[in-house]
Image: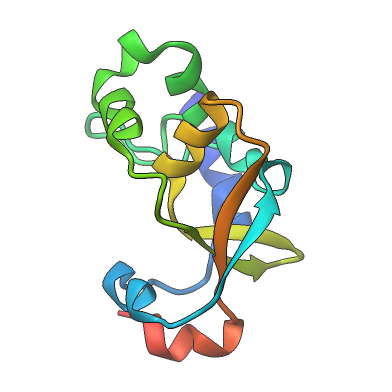
Length: 130
């Protein structure tokens, strides 16, 4: 097994068991609250980014530490508008991002200790699925 394949299995175990439409998530009217970035920082150590033709083969932390080696994602991180909150949902006992990984990465790089989030209740799954 290659290193990339080793990463896919944990993502399958921690990820959502449904596909969502980001535009439907954005349309929800959920309140914005603050959360310690530490509660979401685990996302930075899983390869949730896709580089080249790969799938789930690049960790946000790799973009943070070697932006020149990952120019496309580094540019997306730098251009991320952190004025928008991250959209999260509880999944298997932890907070999981629905939207906002590039913003989270940029905020972590800037040394932020708190982030704006919208906590999407699981009861909304039917409203956001594709």
